Image (tube, rainbow, N blue to C red; front, side):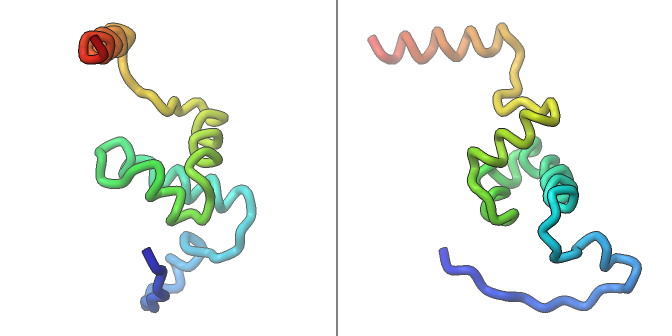
Amino acid sequence: MPLQNATIQITAEMLPYINTHRSEIDFKQRALLLYPFIQNNTLSHGRVAEILGTSKWALIQLYGSMGIPYIDMEEAELEKDVETALAAAL
């Protein structure tokens, strides 16, 4: 998908939140701001990685380093998914 530039006007107070500098802190802040969209299935990990200009794997590792798991389900739910996958494979 080709990328395009967009110009928006914002108040001066909002400028720090969209700072274009690529520091590690800014990157983590942006990743955390986008995480709720992953949680509610609005955006995928891959799409958030694209928005942040990184790889999906790097994003998953970043979230993991902050204690946010990639697979977020209860053990019983995971066991049920495994059983379903095994049954489908037979």
